[in-house]
Length: 632
Image (cartoon, rainbow, N blue to C red):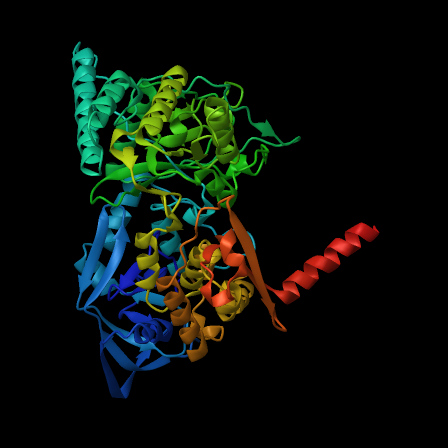
């Protein structure tokens, strides 16, 4: 049977089930879908047209000695949507035979369908001949390939390199910013003024929003004056502004590291044209420079954005990351940071324009992050989002710029800033200081993403107000709307997302435990905890049952009743309640007015502060490890 080659991207069947293992098979006469996909559709309650045939359809795998597969079921899908670089491609009425021997999540699309879409073997061969008259298609050492497999490999080589595909869950997908290329026609200053006027218009609309939220008397006029004075701090898009005025990031490379240089990838014409224009714009704005003598070079990849027809370029930073000594820098503890909000009533939120691309990269480190294009090797002068030190360096820059203000009204998580105060006047005093600091260091803020007066602010996924802290209803609703997971990747996403909210969910560890244990089994089966590996593991194969479905719904019910947490107050008494069972422990902290201490428990006015829970075997294991270290 021909070697299976998956597409770069997956497919959605009936807009419900994601299939990562999609094969466009020139050797297949019929479409084939695995039982795993059908089971996943059934688990989500999908109704599809399935027919059972008295006479089975025999599918002959490639090879004279291969035994035929008998398939007795066929299905007609309403929609199968393939992901492409130019946006989704939907196939209506796709008919497929069901392989009931396979519980994997797989789909094979046949040659006849490919021909309907415009595929032609003759066009493929003509295109290959136009590039080269001879091709080396010999198998790699230790591999045995059929002639059909070699043809498929030739097709795949035209689409992608043999390098491993970038897993977005790794956090190494470094997107380059969209920038305009200076025209040099003498009108650049005119365009700059037009952009400044556009930014000022956005800021004035933000003043109107703030007034609608409750600003009174002279407050809107003061905010308008403040923003007009600092208008140069704001940029809707990055241009040829210099980087932030801080010490550049200098990367420490591990001893004996050897330069890594990728091979040249092939790109379709549309991607080539986009890359040519985009790299030229980056170069014209001083964000990259041509460096064909670079000894390091990573592979850029062109991927579609959410907006149809819009592309972006990403750079794979994994080769240099593997050779980097990480930079130490502490990230703020969000729970502790919330203690700084006690008594506050007014807030603002600020966001950098294009984040890390405002941060300078040391000249000695720039070559490490070079990338290879068909037009030459380019070297960036700014920090890439996915590089090892990016997060720690960004947080260190925040402390360098705003150190005197941090935890004194200003909180910062990377490029997201939260300002808080007990009055609007104090809030605007703080905002003036922050914007003056931005001007001093050359930091640019996004006018569209900033809010200058809020009675209730969303920051780091939490809703903050004078009443306390809770989680964003939008995030909670997104989790509640999730259908039952069908793959281990779906389950991992749900467990990780709810874990972020555990402090507001009493008995969270006990509640989530069945799903966590099933996820551990799936990780062992996949041999990896990466999203891409887990997406290939159907939960039905690792023990998913009705008990897990009930647990999933119980966790979602707990999200509906999530407990808002109060700001800690020094004038109130803290109460701690604990409990434990054979397997779990739990604790809840509340605060009450001092005068309530003499009242019966049911009459006390408890305000939730925090809840925590854990698995006793894990705690015991940690204790044994601690005692062992103490003994040594």
